Image 1 (cartoon, one colour):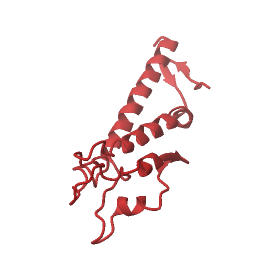
Image 2 (image 1 turned 90 degrees about the vertical axis):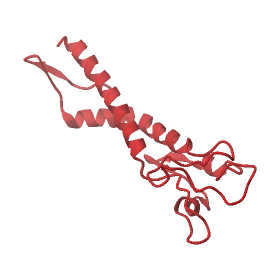
Image 3 (image 1 turned 45 degrees about the vertical axis):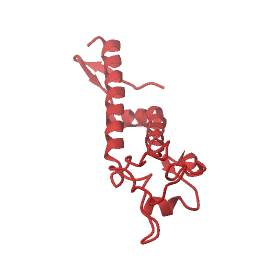
Image 4 (image 1 turned 90 degrees about the horizontal axis):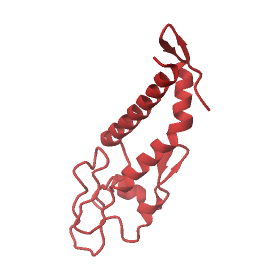
Amino acid sequence: MGLKIEKKDDILVYDLPEVVKYVNDNMLGEIMELALNHYVSGFPTSNTELGGGKTNISQNGWLRRQEDYTHPALVKSGHLKNSLRIENDCIISETEYGEYHNDGVDGRLPQREFLGESDELEDKIVKFLEDKLEALILKWHYKFDI
């Protein structure tokens, strides 16, 4: 699939909806993988790491546990971390307990948000799109010798 681009008076002319469709068809999968990897990387790999830091709420890390455990927070079996997946252009986790950890339970379970709004992820996506679109524009300019 390619974009229909014309050169008129040394200016590239293309239809914005077509560009949006091109981005959606060709880059959405890569953006979703970028997001999935972003959230998965928030889970600690040792019991000395805080974890978190990948959402706006958890940007300073998850609350330290009161007791010492041999496994990292939220990674006893790895089931929660491994449950994160892409479905219908969303990152989801289908565990019975993930929601309780992500949102917290008043007085019983501190919030350790692992999925949520993330300015850091938004910046990564913007950078990814800028790089990809810049490469496409350079390719178009080369093709049309502008």
